[in-house]
View 1: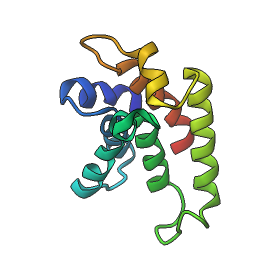
View 2: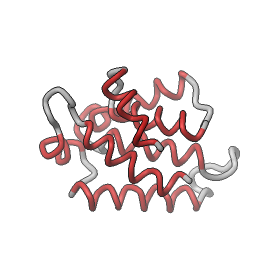
View 3: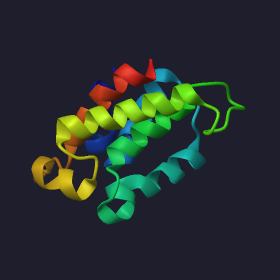
Length: 131
């Protein structure tokens, strides 16, 4: 399960929220993402570095995109991916009362663990949409 792997990346390797969720999904589902992809995912950390979309959600959405549809499908024609991402974000939003880092972080941040609870929540929800 992805949730079982996020602790290793988030706490054990000090990865960001976006990186931890994405790396856990990449490992669990063998998505084949390389270092360039991981570097790009890092830009979504901390709410795209400005408190916007939660990085854990963004990392999950990226994993869904890699897992869903044929490799040559673009985002506009990949209806399955769009629906899964939309549902994933909506469920996270309902569970955490927002999908924005600036709104989620005050409720989930714990000194020493940072936003581990947020990362675990995103990973748990992601399982339903990445299968």
